[in-house]
Each structure stands twice: as C-alpha cells, then as structure tokens.
Length: 255
Image 1 (cartoon, rainbow, N blue to C red):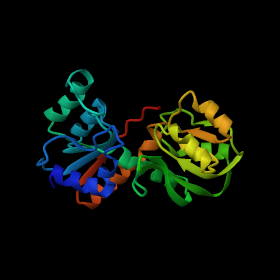
Image 2 (cartoon, rainbow, N blue to C red):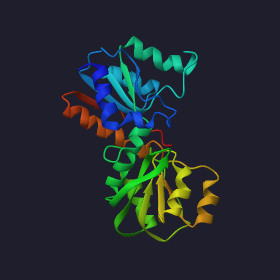
Image 3 (cartoon, helix red, strand yellow):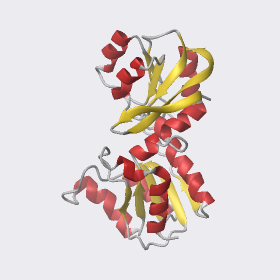
Image 4 (cartoon, rainbow, N blue to C red):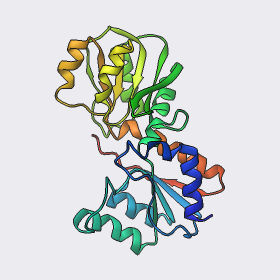
C-alpha cells in the first residue's frame, strides 16, 4: 500500500479536514512521497530524533505520530528541523501526523482511550475547539474517592516514574469526569460549567490552581505523554486490520 493511500484512509477515518482551521499542526503526510510503498508502520507519540531513528532501525517505511515536526510552517530546515527531517529522508521513512483529530476522535482518540481505561459510561464529546471537540466526558460506574482515581491512573499510565498530581478543590468523591488529554487545562471552565467533578488532563499551568480552587472543581494532572499514548496505539490496530505490519515506539518523557 502506498503512503498516500494510507494517509487518505487515515484522513477519512479521523475526519482530518474538519480540524484544518483550528489546528496549528498540518495533519496528514508531513514528510515523504505519496508513492512510497509501505509494508511496516511504526507508531509513536512524538516525531523526535529518537523515535525517528528507532522506527528506522525497526525497518519501518512509515512513522505515524501524534506530535509532528511542523507547527504552522517551516521557514528554514536548520537546527532541530534539520535534525528531524534529515534522518527521515536519509532512511526513506515517511511521516504521517495526526494531532487534534486524534485527540478528539470519539472511538480511537486519546480521550476515548483514557475513558476506556476508567470504564466511563454515558459518554459524550467534550472540549470545544472551534466547531470540533478535542476530548470526552462520561461517568464512572460508581462514585469514587479522588485519591483512588489518582492511584488507578498512576498504576495504569506510563508516567515515566512521576506521580500523578491532583488539585483537590472539588467533591471528595467523583463521578462525572471530563477529559482533555495533553495540555487540556484551558477547558477547565467548560468542565466546571458542565458540572463535572474532575477534569483529567496531562499537564497544568500556574493559573489553573487558582481557577480550579475558585470554581470548586478537582483537576488531575496525569502527564502529557502518559495521557496521549492511546490514540497512536489504536491507530496501530487499525493499520494491522488493513494488512500492515506495525511496531510501537515508546519514549516516555515523564512530563
């Protein structure tokens, strides 16, 4: 199967075009010819030098990542841009990127995967960005003490050895959970307005402490990387169903 054909099928599956006006990442095939014949695909969260080199060493023809190498545009292929693009070209490794489409996909996305981990029910799209969504909301099977939810995430997520943080400013037991993975604290207000007991995301910002305290809502910070491994793993399964060999490149940052 050609890289261009795979990219087109993934774009359709992920509704990539719907996010074109709201995503700083130009999603789709970022590097490589569309007629590149692909037999083996590597999936990873980040298109970093390490994951590119490991994908090449594994014999991959295509690397699929959540975070790509282009944000807006590239004016010069120097420094970090060169260090990442050069090994892709030298090793004839194509790169496909899916950022917000993979956050927001309600079955294959990062938030959906985290909701699966927590066995959430009564799910609905959450986290508006333009006319699209980048997260998911649902309910735990039963009300759960917030520390128990934190312990569960800490046990099941690849946090790189770092503790899951919690800002305990809401109910002591939680049931209604809003999720926006990665850097999702900008949706704290939406979560509070919707009546969520807790917003689960990856990383925080200084102001979220006061915002959460004033809004009376819990926030769980489980790690940017740790909360965004689900989508690429799900895509790996889709690609296998399409008859492609896949390999997963895990490179936890602890952040």
